[in-house]
Length: 214
Image (tube, rainbow, N blue to C red; front, top):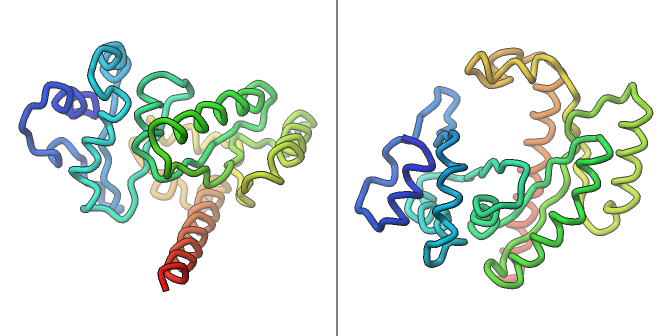
């Protein structure tokens, strides 16, 4: 059972257990996997009523079981990504430290703006995460500098960045997280630093919301 299965059930309005099919990991992280069926489902979504909010409808059924729900999106702006933006509270944008991925930032920001205006008014951009950073190359350094110059004044660019690393690329084939596979690697440390940064930002937001409520 995959995410495509759960979305298809929502589309057909079939009664089902929303928690079935979710994999429970020993690191206390649950996963609902996806495969190529999700790409095929994207075409079916085009003809469904409330097509942009199908994922939101599903997540409403499970969100009370979790502190955080992370939606990992493919690098495209199709119907599945629109569903993710419609369901999310906030967005973290991973950007490779290379010219073409950085160039696509403008189109993504326009899409987020449209979703916020028409579908999900509470949607926010938390920040930009630099990934596949190879500090040894002039291209990577110049791309990072350009991103900070162009976007650093209007949104957060996380201090942590994810380095280009062979160990990080190997983990998918091993079926393990980077923390279990190579806990002392630079990539593992970078993800730890990033997680701490995100959690600290979340705590700060909660304090501000509490202060406003008073």
